[in-house]
Length: 75
Image (cartoon, rainbow, N blue to C red):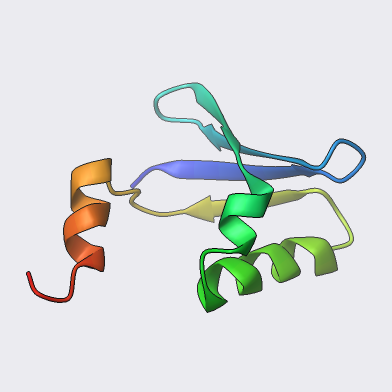
């Protein structure tokens, strides 16, 4: 299972996803996440409510094709 860091930079309004396994850093679009429904809005609110600026999580991150098929109720 991969380990990710989610880093919030409130001064610049940037959110970063750091993948320790693949050693990559990806910028996340805060506005896009926030307007992507209840889950996105809740995610941003949980980041804003934290006292620190780093969230550590261990999870499997689906690739684009898996995310697309899991979001399609007809499949």
